[in-house]
Length: 138
Image 1: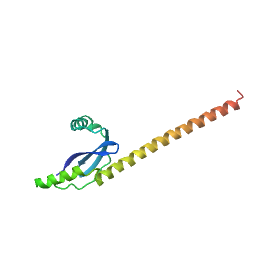
Image 2: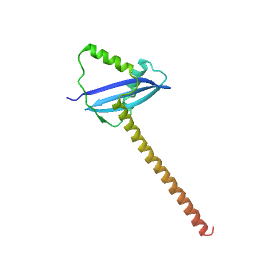
Image 3: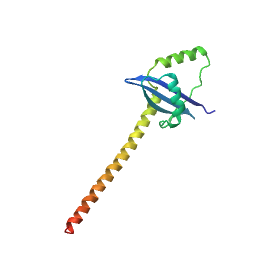
Image 4: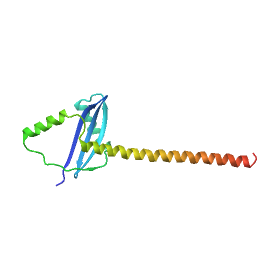
């Protein structure tokens, strides 16, 4: 049995309000962090989720063991209360976000390295061209 879950946690991370989308598909957790700015209203969050969920860039998947939810309504209520008082993200979510940051860092690094190499090559070719022009006696 494959369990698919989605969860959004909104909290205040000075000076902005931040939302963490957690997605569990096939026993793997992936996370996306969204900065809202000012405190978002419920309807604004709902509207954002409906319009932009397909465009969100989730982190690489992390293995996760999905536990069966307790059916006791008092326990569920207690867990919901506990979740709402905790500010921040769970450790698995933090790991997934860290993976995403590292992946983006590597991508940025390779792109900037390619740009740097291209610029060096262009400078070298300019120098060579000027050298040839001087050599020809122009």
